[in-house]
Length: 362
Image 1 (cartoon, helix red, strand yellow):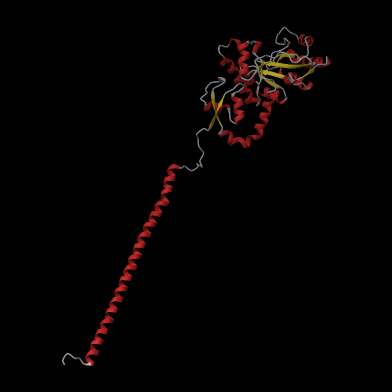
Image 2 (cartoon, rainbow, N blue to C red):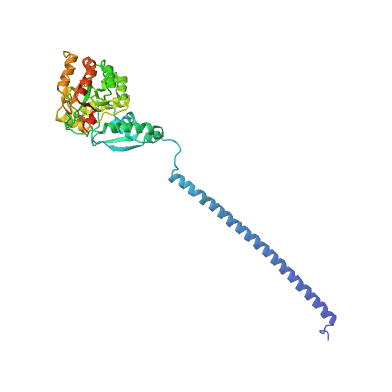
């Protein structure tokens, strides 16, 4: 009977068991809370570590291309480089330092400097020449108008075909003649000659030497200003047939060309007259390769002879008049300066028209 428990006893034990179940539940809930918190914090820390690592990787990958790019790709420079920029030009027939400088908008000095040219030797056909072009681009705006005017001047000079075949007379189907004046020594009579030509409204061709131009720069400018043509009579007036090399001939022509270009801003091409009238097949061929054609004469006035009187000079020209005649006179001749107005009038009275060289061969 002792094992039989009373209802009170059973109720007490049931209460204890119930309180124990509540404790278990509380402990379990606390454990769950702790575990959840720990897991959440751990997850946050882990996520933070991953995100921090990712940010660092992003920073690395963001800066890395810049560093690589700076080594490989060079940004356009905003500073002006001092290295000369140039193109290569193969020298061809008719080229000269002046013509190339004019074409590319640079200077003869810059071309020679870039190519290491320290002398005045002419250009040889077929050689490679460096032409600075950066300078042309920098000056193109401010020199466009003046360059256009220069180009027009050069074009006017290119009206007679370049050839090794010499011209000594124009077409004979029209009564036309042309006056030419050679200059290699004195210039004293030139102002009077220019005055006579201007008074008669006649245009002529002046074959000048480079040395004459150096000594008479203002007269040269005046010749051009009055509308006369200038032909190449070499630089120093040598007998070209006696020069040993072709380069010496070219040098005489190119040096004169550069001087007249610098003084009067014109080209002599293609007009050339050999000093003393001395030429041979070699001289004519070399001159043609340099862009010239020899212009000889039909009538020599003999005004270079001191024994000739002014009236004799005039009569010699008038008596020899024929259609297409190229008349030779000289800038230093006092006889020509004295009788030129009368000579022009006499030519016109005989129904001859006095024209330029280009007009004569049209």
